[in-house]
Image (tube, rainbow, N blue to C red; front, top):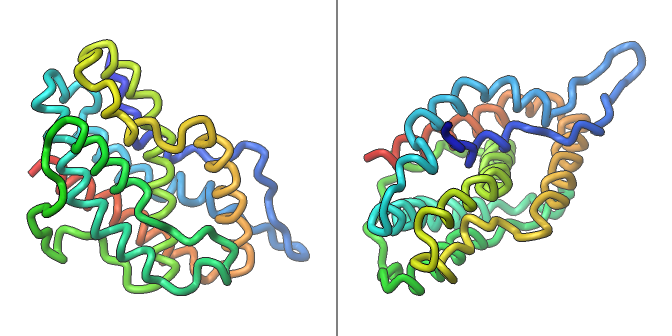
Length: 217
C-alpha cells in the first residue's frame, strides 16, 4: 500500500479549531475551507508524485530532491518578498525548505548551488498576499506529511541517505505544533478578511498544480 502522503497531511487542519461567528453568521474556518476547496488539486498531486513509491533507488531520491530544490528556492524567495507577513500575524517565510534540500544534496555530493533556471510559468501564480498565504499552507502541510514518507525511504535506502534526509524531516519534532499554530493563524486571518478566501484558495491550488507539474517533468 502506498504511503503517498507528502501532501495529504496538508489538508488536515487542527480539529480543535473554533468556528468563528459574527452575530447570526457563522464563518467557516479558513483551514477547513482550504481542505475542501483544494481536495481535487491535492489528489492530482498524489497521483503525479506517487511518493514514496516513485523512489526505488538512490538516483531517484537524488533526482526528487533536486527537482524540489529547483522549485522551492525561487518559490520561497518569492514568498519572503511579500511585506505583509508580520502585520498579518504570520511568521516571515525564509528559505528553510530549500536550504534543507541544498544541505541534503550537498551531503549526497549533488551540486545544488546553481540550479537550472525555472520559468515563471512553472511557478504558482501568486499575484497578492492572500495567494501567498495559500502557498504557505501547501508548503507547511507538505512538510508535515513528509514525515510519514521518510520511514519508507529509510527502510529502502538505509545508510545511503543518512544525514541527507533533513527535507523529509520537515521541522523535526516541532513540525506538528507549528502546523497547529499555522492553522490558527489561517483561521484568524480568514475571520478578519473573509473576502480574501477566494484568493487564498487560488494560491493553494496554484501551488499544488505547480508542484505536481514540475516534479513529473
